[in-house]
Image (tube, rainbow, N blue to C red; front, side):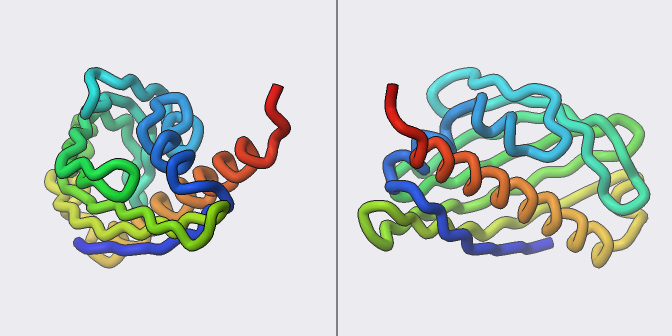
Length: 154
């Protein structure tokens, strides 16, 4: 399963990069997130309740960041398990491009594989569910980063 997306964020590229590497920000934006913890300079662990089609399960997983090129891009490699629901693994390349001093274009391309019960529900349903989760995450992320950027400094 492959996905891609593009999101315009009203914040400077350095601020978007910082938010993409902040566990609290990520946890607030990931749909169904129960916890996200940074476990080193280049890794996160977390738990989330995720619904993919008719299958809803609590997933635990780890994401490692590679090919770091701050504040322009990185690659995420991750895998998670959802008990009887199955597992998922994959990766994504995230690229940040500065449109102007206050606007950043975020692009991502991702690939994922699922197994277990998840693999039985059909790739089209999984693809649409995964795309909705990604769109929900990036919509919340863009709104949060833009509102933080617009808030007056203390």
